[in-house]
Image (tube, rainbow over all chains, first blue to last red; front, side):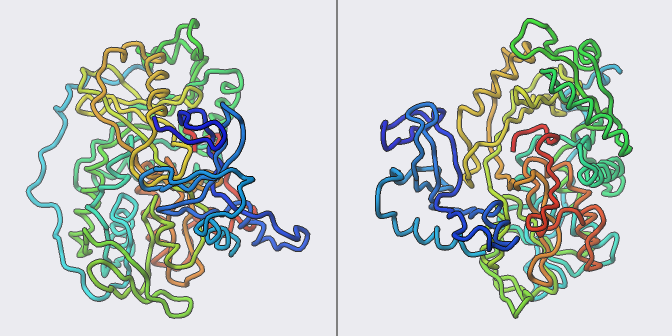
Length: 103
Length: 413
């Protein structure tokens, strides 16, 4: 079982965590003006990257707080974790965030 | 209802033929290029030739034929799905399975030993009975069995009331069963090859050549291949391909683990699935107990998963089948399954005029193999979706016409 580094609690066993999918998926700025297609992409469509992927995890059996991780989906290795209140997201994460807003 | 006849492990395995298919160099151009040499790609090739006379076809496989999910599944075949749309495609597929050995002229060891889907709570019971009635309305064989009848079908199931999740009954589909997955792939490959279709292994797609809203060719590790029509049958790696095309597809790839025991005498006469405690078990022809679990929660392409998933699955298996306690685990592995938001496949047109999509089968692709091959071949040949796949379009995520099969899939997606 792999250890995951919770940014608050330190390394804990994988079973304590809950997976939250892709990180940086912004809620539409003007929800009332969003088309059906844009809504569909917000609700259903996520990147499915093979390689380094920015995603959300929750330390649900510990401090119960969410954080962001960059994990490699081919090796499952966690490359870095970051608290949500940590300013300055990693460049890769920003690039992914921009891409995820495009339909 | 009685357990199937006693089998001698290994006795019904056929000899391998000397030769199954050619290993050709790719031509520069084909009418149809199928990306993915697993069950779905090979079945599509077979039915393109058989039903539509289309044989200028290449099946491109980045590894070896049938070496991806086709070699990694738990071989279970059933059609007891809840919704009409799912029932239609899986039941037609089951009917094709029933004649497939003859069609392919090759043994696939299709064994209709039935499947039990266990119910462990009052709500499980109600949902199960509802599904049985829905199945009957769709012409799918289904029965509700009380606990003592479950024991008659599969005597090794622990039907004691003194376990954490007692068996309160089960749905039973007698026509369900298993097949020998490798032989299914080889049978389709053999027939496709006999029809003149090129099966090209060790040929990974690295990009696409496009002209407006058409794809003109497929770039591969063995050169560029021009294509009149392209069909994507790459299961867990579909979005790796669609990313190259700039198409977004709402699938997430997850590792789905399975494992086998050492060879045992015949002890397990049917297929048993349990959603609540999450394990599914059958006994392979040679004698291994074949067990599947749920998917790992995270995205992954690594063809392996987390140990705790197996641990929970084994705990459930040993409680349900106390005789398994002394069996030795032989090996574990994972396939990469492409799960969609409504637990249903995505088949049909894409924003490119001549590119067809076949993905999102999640944990249920094996049983659909002949059915989707039939329907996708029809769709490619006519340019119009076969009625069985028409509900499973990519645009249903925009229109909201979802086919939400989470409750009936009997495995967690």
